[in-house]
Image (tube, rainbow, N blue to C red):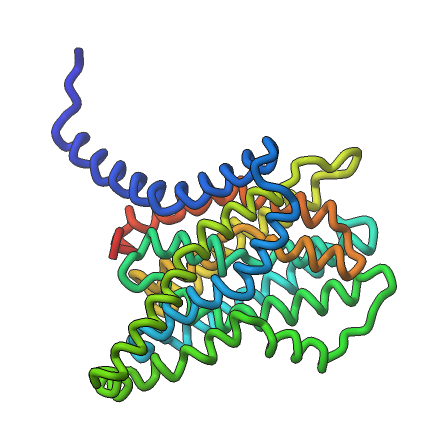
Amino acid sequence: MPVLPIRRISSIIPCMEHLLYAVNSVVPSFLIIALGFVLKRIGVITEEFIKLTSKFVFLVCIPSLVFINISKSNFYQIFSGIEAGIVVGSIILVFIIAWILSFLFVKDRKGQGAFIQGAFRSNFAIIGLAVMNSAFPLTGSAHGAILLAFALPAYNILSIVALSYFGLEEQKTNPKKVLFEIIRNPLIIAVVCALPFALFREPLAALNAQPGISNVTSIFDNAISLLAGIALPLSLVGIGGTLRFSREGKSIVPAVLATTLKVLFAPVLVIIAALFFGIKGEALGILFILSACPTAVASFSMAEAMGSDRELAAEIIVLTTVVSVFTLSAGLAVLAGMGLITPGV
């Protein structure tokens, strides 16, 4: 039996380490999604359960997770205006490209809005934070939560613009309504509430050192941490329960194209921009994960509520979710293999 040369073995081992790092970072979250899909099909969880828990997670648990991550972070060390600019800029650019392509590849008007939204809107608050927490356990979630504050307004504004413009009744976009929706978003509220704790970390730490105050704050910290702890698992199960795999008699081309834009083009665009500005390490990994996440499940309910093609929206969610298992894993493995990110740091 031929024996592998020492050099070949030594080159294979790092590759395997990078691949295992990527798989361990990405696959657990998608296994929970798969569990949710199975549980829904065998009747362990119901549509009503998914609706109630999704609302509870969106209004309470995910905001708690975002609050904890940001309030405990070193904001001045993590925040970067360039990173925020890359996030918002890439979202806008993919939105514009998707808008143009919708006229070429989507035949009916109500499908154009669903196509555009599916191509740029990431499931960053749930899948993104879960993968970041696994890939960069020290500060990944905090880093991602800060960037989430910039991504969310862009997602909401552009989604409403696209769905309103291409809605069945060609609804006019109301700037006041859009602004109100952004302001009342629980995740935005969580970010705003957490920022003072991150910005004035040292004075608050000194105040918290007082015996009476420390006891009170530790109680609240523990309560919020418990809520934050159930946010991602419960959210991932809910995502799995909402997945649909049927779209009878309709072209799959728009869904495939939207998936390509979402999980292939957008991540490549973000990586190029980040490397141009010299961004490496955790920051590069966070930006990649943000852009490579599958389409947000919320895009389905928004498409349905605003007269868009709900079936196309659902198909894009399914395709991006399935494909992103491989693209997220491959991307992290390649970045780690090239020495652009450091696994587990």
